[in-house]
Every structure is written in C-alpha cells, then in structure tokens.
View 1: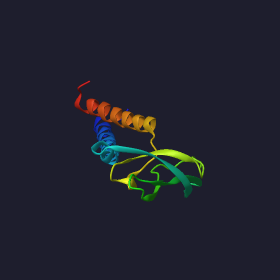
View 2: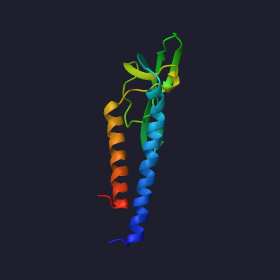
View 3: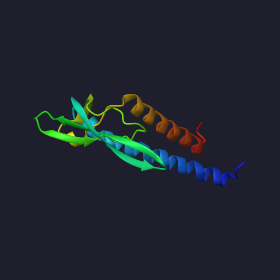
View 4: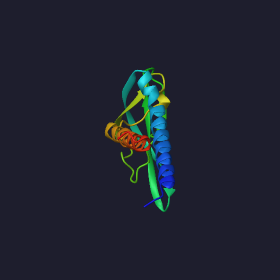
Length: 133
C-alpha cells in the first residue's frame, strides 16, 4: 500500500496528463468544430516510414484537390504498424473549410474512444482527489 502523500501525487500526475491529453486532442479538433467540414476523395501516394524501438511505423501521405481545385499533399497524423491504406488506393478524407493542410483520414471510432478514455481518467481521478465519489 502506498503512503497517502505518494498516492495523492500520483493522482495529481494522472489528472494533469489526462487533462493535457484532452486539451491537445480538442485543440486539434477545434478547426473541425469551428468551420464546416469538407469531405473529398484522396489518393494515397506514398508512406513515410519511421523506425522506433526496432519497429517500422508507416504514415500515409495522400494527394487531393480542395474546393478551388488546388492540389495538396498531406500526411495523416497517425502512424500505423503496416502500410495501410495501400499506395494508389482512393480514400475519403475530411478537412475544415479553408484549412486543407489539416486534412486527415476520419477515424470516428478511434477519436471517440480517445475522448472517452481520457475523459474517464480525468473524471475518475478528479472525483478520487476531491472525495466526491
């Protein structure tokens, strides 16, 4: 059993980390909440690779045209352990109107689970610290 002072410090760290995580995720989603969201089709043109801890991670890069017809090449924000979607595949992407460089592949389930997990940790840690529960 941890001494109460150490347990409280650990809870404050969890609260700070989950709060920071929520703030960062919300910050990346703000342009999508403030502006109309555009959906368009994009073509996967390559995968940027990064080696980390002996594993290769892949980041899809896609090419698309915005509503004015200007072409953009954008990297998705997520790294994956395999090169998916495959090069040449046509996918649907979203971007906030007027901000095509913030385009991304929509992962609604992933984003929902991310918000749910971070929110759950934040709320439960806060209730434990305040003794509310």
